[in-house]
Image (cartoon, rainbow, N blue to C red; front, top):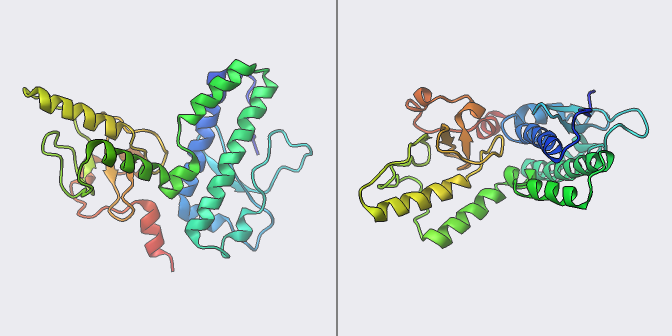
Length: 256
């Protein structure tokens, strides 16, 4: 198993890119690939760990045999708790341990490459701008955004109605809008506020922030937004979907 230690990862930016790649892989395992992840965590097998790689891939595998290992090891034996807990609680627990592992890997690199106090602080601040895996998996990040939006804009929480000024799509519709120019200055201000709000929206698969030039779609079951590319939905396909369910919600329904 390749731990992903790279000889050129010697700057704060390089280590942060390594962190984001591993984080995206772990988020994918616990969201869009959750059915496959569930099956791989067989409680009948030995102690298993969830690894994330800089390439945004993930793997469930045995811990490294060498002592000490090349990198800090993830939580051991995540498979043993799979059938003894509610699935949501189990995934949340794995997410917490994954967050802890990511930080240990990041600061291992920081120590190995001789980061000083200023570099460590800058690296942590860059990491802290991203929601944790736990927040993405449990929907806490979205809830915080919704509460903030409700308090600041006093808008209706009913997602079934599109915004009449921006034409932004509603729940279950494709979120691929262009910013509209309006002759009314008040309308322009409202558009800016709405863009700011959507700019904090997080993809339920990769955890990245919303951008207006990307195609997004919302799950009618869990109400999380997803990049179209992350869930393999195109604008053309979205036009024919009456009620969209993300891979995670679809798999839960299909599971016996």
